[in-house]
Image 1 (tube, rainbow over the protein chains, first blue to last red):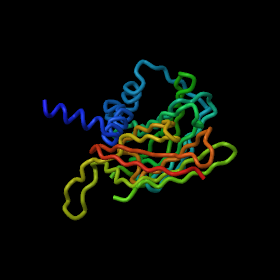
Image 2: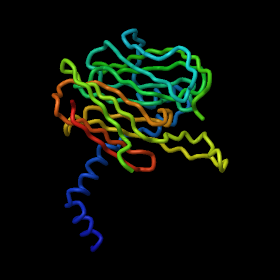
Image 3: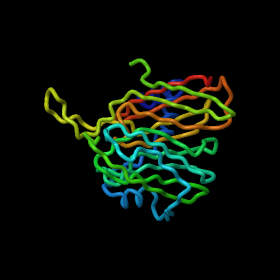
Length: 148
Length: 104
């Protein structure tokens, strides 16, 4: 009983309840998809039963020849409409799913980040537009791998 | 730790560009400590949330293959100078950090 009332007091304090609020936002990390070891399995796990069409309307801005695979700048842009998500995969990394970005309607269809690439590989961008999935891939050569 | 999140914004023709660098080791689990020879356990940011004022405008799910001291840039509409942009992350040990700045 004492413990329960302590929880009630804690939840009533603004600081602790704001922690719980942020916990609710942080709840979606898809451990299964992120630990898959092939591109196909990762895509099937992250986008179950979804068709993915290839599209030239996506651009993957990355150097063709990577000196240092530990820090590879990548920019994804697209002309597709109503983009609600951008995902980034590296086919031959130990776990191909690298990052996913959920975009609200206010966001422009663009993200830039830096990733690690272990060996020469295709980079795959998957874009969700008007509820459908589109992808594009680009091969990059890697001189020194960046997975440690 | 003082804030390990550096956020910069620029605002042009109604579009706000956010650029952030976050201090984090993003350990893959494959590397060894050069002094002890022991493997460094994997340790990385899993989730990151960006807000415009109080509204979530972007969420990121990351793996350990995002580079050390992650860089993130994105763009959004509908903000005016003086509005707030915030970034919060949670890593694989459950640690969290947030930072916010006013759009210039």
